[in-house]
Each structure stands twice: as structure tokens, then as C-alpha cells.
Image (cartoon, rainbow, N blue to C red):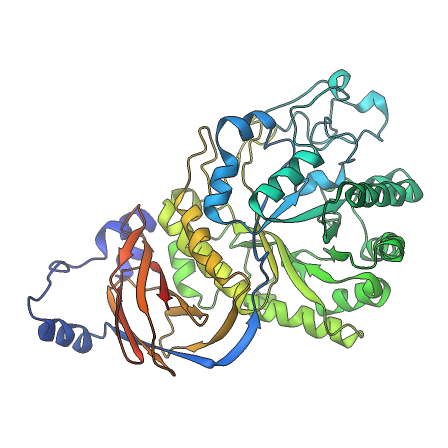
Length: 503
């Protein structure tokens, strides 16, 4: 086992199953004896009487990019139907960093270009060039209808019953010394929503304003002051609005910075957003196996500051409470498996299993809204030579076929709006999450294992299951046996298992 791990994912995937692994005793007694004496039997306890928090109905979201998910792609490749099949609960618009350039009345402008900038620079996107694959000349910006405008976005939200998560550009106002115009633009957008009957509850105040490649790199103090100015004006006219801020990178998340930011902007902030990309530059099978629970570790992070996601979330809540805001919510409006040399070799099933563990961590720690980055991301190799791939619920190239991650989303969507219950296991390589009638289990082990689940109340109804495992590149059914307060199934190696009790 140890020697195969050093050769990485591809070798391990075909060699960890010992000679004779396929042996299945003909007698159920022999089968029970085989699993109980080989260390392959694991236990889980579900305490349905111990209620935890309720998962936000919008928990399971995804990022759209207004210039990547063009009208042509949307119409040609059935994207709405694929999102519906995944049971997506939220859509983020206009995207990520494009938010810092975007003006909602001018949706025909290229991504990463600001129509408030000096016209002589239009069409060049300084520092980025013709980043996107669908590029439009500045002379066509006013007439360009190929990108997703706000009305089209809301039409899709309505069709999918998905919560809209909408971004306000603070960068243009700061960069061009036009704060008043920026606030007026934001209020005008909200008034338009009210006029059209669009129920937009969540608005995020720009994207990664601290980033050194941002449209304008804010200091923490600058961002807090801008967030307070915009937030005060917004809350005065639209007090029910929920505002989301992104004051720090996940790799430089400190209690002191959260406290400093909240002392200024706290009165208008409802949610703090962190963009968690798992293991940027470090992702591998070995890294995944070595960390349960998963850690917020990347190639930039100081080793002394590596924490679990639960610890990151607790840090934010404690820092906010210390400054007088104990009810702060947490979102992850961008998250995914980050690019690394090894992640390029991961198959679809293994990607989905890691994504499942991330989502289970977020749900367990009451991250209220998550948005996978992205639905579709197409870039020009002339500008971004590596063209890093961020795995999605569809493939990154036409015809954008559904991936196994789409089915992961479909399975986990059963938690949306449901109350979690206490679940525990003595096995360090078993990860579990449960509601009254669902159980999600990850087996982080190279062995097929018998999972024995004990409930504190009788199981009423029939149980069925689905599985995503590294051995299989399809979703497979799981045979589940129930008796009184016990549920038993077999978990394949390195697998995510979704068990549902139909009462």
C-alpha cells in the first residue's frame, strides 16, 4: 500500500485491491464473519433526537459567468435542464472577478473590462488582454446581446427556483473616484428589481477586493469604508437586503483582520464570504487521505496557520462576536478542488467524492450558501497558458456533458431546507452527515467495508442508496438492509454513499 501511494493516483486506482478481493462467500454467515474479523466492519451512530441547525434551502449553488455562459451556449447545450437535474439551489451573477468591472446596464461589455475606464483603453483589458474565448470589439458593446444580461439571469433563476446571489461593483467607484455614482448604480439596480418583481435577497459587495490582480486592490480599511458607505445607503432604502462581504483570502484568514473589518463595516454586514479552494498546488490522493477532517491548506499558506475548515469557520464567528456581531452568517461563494499537478489526473468519480467531503464539511458547520466555481469557464490560452481546469457539474468543453459531480449535487440537495441531526463514528476514515431521513457517508479507505448504522429510534419505511466510487465511472445503486433500529450497507473503496429512507 505504502509503495503504491508514492506512484500517485493512477497506479493506486488499479492496484490497491488485493488478489482475491472479489471473493464473495456464498453464505451470509461467512460474509458476516469475513467482514467482522478482517477489520472491515465500521459503525455509525445517528441520534435523530439531537437536532442541529437547518440547512439553508439555497445551500447548493453554482457560479455563472455572464460572458462565459453566453446565450448561444445556454440555448444550444441544454444548460438549464442540466442545472435543474442537479437541483441547484442558488445562482451567482455576474460571476467572480468580473463583478469588479461589471455595470448591470451594460452587459455587452467584455469580461474584465470597465466601461467607466478611459475609452482609449477599451478592448485591451490592461493586464489581461483578450482573456475570454468570446470577445467583442468595443464598438459592439452597446449592441452586443450574446452575453447573459440580468433579465436573462433572473429568468433562469425563476425557472430553476434558484436563489439569485447578485454582485455589486465597488471597484469602479473606488478606482475612478466615483463612489456616489457607484452607490446610485447599485440602488438603481435594486429599484429595477422591485419594479420588475424580482425577489433578490442576497447581494455581495464586490469580489476578492484584496486580490493583487483585482480591478482595484483595496486595503482592508478601504474595503471596510466602502462596504459601510454602500451598505448604509442600501439598508436605508432596502432594509431586508442581506449583504455579503469578502474581507480576506482563505490563505490569509486572521482573527485580527476580521475584527478590524467588522468594527467599521459590521453594522451593515449579514454574511462573511470566504473562497475555499481545496489544496491549491497540493491536491493529490495522498493529501486527501492524510487529512480528515479536510484542512484549508494551499501552496501559499504559512504551515503554522493551517486549520480545518471547521476551525476557519469558528475563527470568523468568534472574531465577529468579539466585535459585537455574534449572529454573522458564513458563505462560500466560490469553492472547488483547486488546480495542482495531480488534480489534472483525477477521474470524475474521485473529483465528486472530494467535492462531497467539502460540501459535507460546509453543511455540518452551517456555511449557509455555497457556490461551486464555475458552471463553465473558457479562457484564451494566449492569455492564460495553463488554462487551469475547475471541475464542474458539466464538462469544460462542448457539448458540456453532465459529469458525476452533477449527480453528487442531486444527491446532496436532499439536505436543502432540512434539519441536520447528530451523527458520529469511531472510525477516523469515515465521514458522515445525516438528517432524519438521509445519511451521507464517505469511506476514505481502500477496502470495501460493511457499514452498520445504529439509530436511536425505529426505522420506519424503506431504505435505498446510491454510490459514487473511485472504481466506477457511473453512479451505482447500493443495497441497504434495515431491521428495527439498524441499517446496513457495504461501502466501496474511496466512495461517497447517499442513503435515503422513504417513510
